[in-house]
Image 1 (cartoon, rainbow, N blue to C red):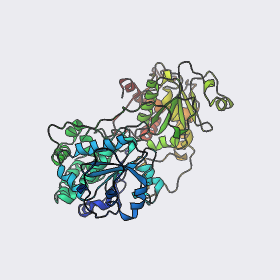
Image 2: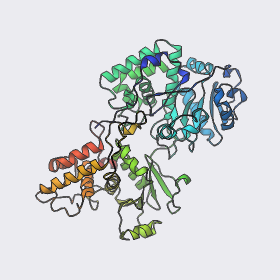
Image 3: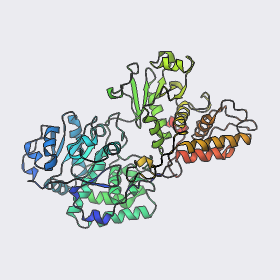
Image 4: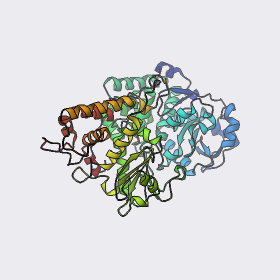
Amino acid sequence: MHITSFSVRIDFALVQVREFFNGVTCLGMAAVVLVAGLACPTFAEEEQPASVTEPPDLFFEIVAPRHREAARAFYHKYLSVDGLPVVASGEVADEALERTQVIVRNMLSGRPDVLERMVEDQMYLIIIGKDQKYTDMPEFRHIRNKEYMNERVRGTGGKPTSFGEENLLSLAIDRYDDESIGVHEFAHTIDGTLHSMDSTWGHRLRSVFLDAVQSGKYKGAYASSNPIEYWGEIVQSYFDCNRINNWNHGPIGDRDSLRQYDPKGFDLVESTLKIPPDNHWRYEYLTHHPTVIAPPKKFAIDPYYGKFSWAREFVIVSHSATDDQLVDTNQIIRHLFAYRHDVLKSLINRDAKLVVLGHDEKLVDLPEWESLKNAGIDPDARFVEFDPATNLIVVDGAEVTRTSDTVNRLGNPVIASMTDAFFKLTADREIDPNWENRGQEVQQYELNVTRLDKRFGEKVRNALKASRQDGLWDGVPILEDESDYLCTGVLAYFDAASATLIPKGSSKPVNNRQALQQYDPNLYEIVHELMAYQDRTDWRITEQHSGN
């Protein structure tokens, strides 16, 4: 099953004639959100400071009148990029403004005319604080459907252009930690400025976009949405900072892959930005992700857990497991749900967490032990399945990347426990009658996937019943119920099942994808559709050892 990036098709003819600075194009959205601007005296006329200061009074003259009073109370940090204002509230780190300055200057190092035009048009950039929401910004506080927008957006192009502090600083709690929102959104701002400077720009961009899409490139990726997002995506790749291999991205994420895969797109970026030969700048992350940090206060993690890792918003904690074990757990979860973030969301929305046990750590050491004991858990266990009553999963740190020859029970404990957890939460979920009638209020990760509910649970149960009638899985005592059945299929699909899964009449274990497809094709088809890896970049647990 494919995940497409289409949410709203924009008539590009309208884009060509739009007054760009009344428009906002945002990452995660194909729509244009209208935000009115204001014509004011050119801000560049005043001498610009070289460091972060309080915003000068003249800055607020370029803010729309209806937002100006709120902006004066909100923005307390200011930095000029050769006349282009960058502003933020007082809680935002100075470094975030300085990083923005670096991005702007390097992206436009070959186009000072574009930067000058932005200044003439009173463009300005704002930084959303790491603990702030998109709709906390003075310019966006009146936007409707705030919950939906705050889930979807951490940066927008247009006037003003915005991006999140956490992304600029590569913080551990950035949900876009493997791409640059700043580069993407500022690419939209460049696009809009070019429309006002060059009457041929829109036609040239649209022509290259259509050529790419009609030749089958970017199938199911966000870049195929429309010319606007195509430009934002290829500029990201040109500067080595695009996300790859998730629900709305393919494998193209850096300059070399862009040049090889989409040479016309590459040439468009290069000929448009005209980066000088002596400027070798590529975007660099301040921190390599995933990473391990102390638990942020906002998550209210028990102080027993001194280690925290964020796997696409899913919480992983530990007291004494190694950092490598937490990072490996994080990576496995990212790959497992690469194309089904909607499924992972069923756990995230319940505030579930996964605990990685250290070498000498026991369940009785955990602050949740009383709840585990009341649930009848063996104090010597090294693996605890998800219980909706505790919202807790426990795995042994020493086992998180083990192959099928060394793991216990069904197979890899991270894959097994996460599969068991989402099955328990979704297999009996009621059907949402409005799921297909939400209009534009659909998140990117929800597009073209089937919501898991009691129909999915019934499908798995019927498949298990049929397999038993056919004598499949005889002699495998650990396969007790439909959750175990699905877990077995998911584990085998990712080559992560235990080598002990040898049913009667089989000469070899059913512990890899090929063996699963041959032995239980019904289960294979359920898992294949469920995990949405069809025509996508593949992954198997054996690759985890190579750092993938």
